[in-house]
Amino acid sequence: MAHWRCLPDAAELDEPVREHRFHATRKWRFDLAWTRLKVAVELHGGTWKRKSGHNGAGVAKDAAKINAAQELGWKVFVFAGDQLKNMAENVMQVADFIRGQTC
Image (cartoon, rainbow, N blue to C red):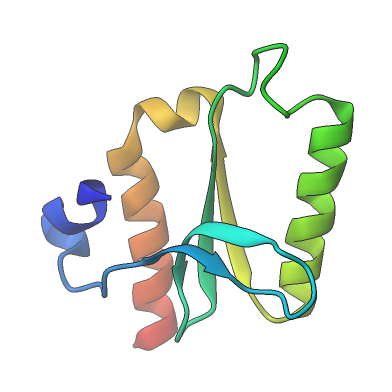
């Protein structure tokens, strides 16, 4: 997760928690989470690959997970496909949001 530490505009952010389990009864985890702020990031690699888990059933499971997170007060950013090629942009989007929440 070096991307989150290396960018000057995001340097003041706390390091995110990896694989944070956010639900009391389900084994759902976020890829990255700022637990104090209830902000999470999900990275969906392999979106266009046949066996990636992002088929119809996988998409439905992801939607259920994100909907449950939102019901619990989480703000969830999802990055997939070509978005993963420019992590700097993704980091800045999340950093800008977090700064807006903490000011």
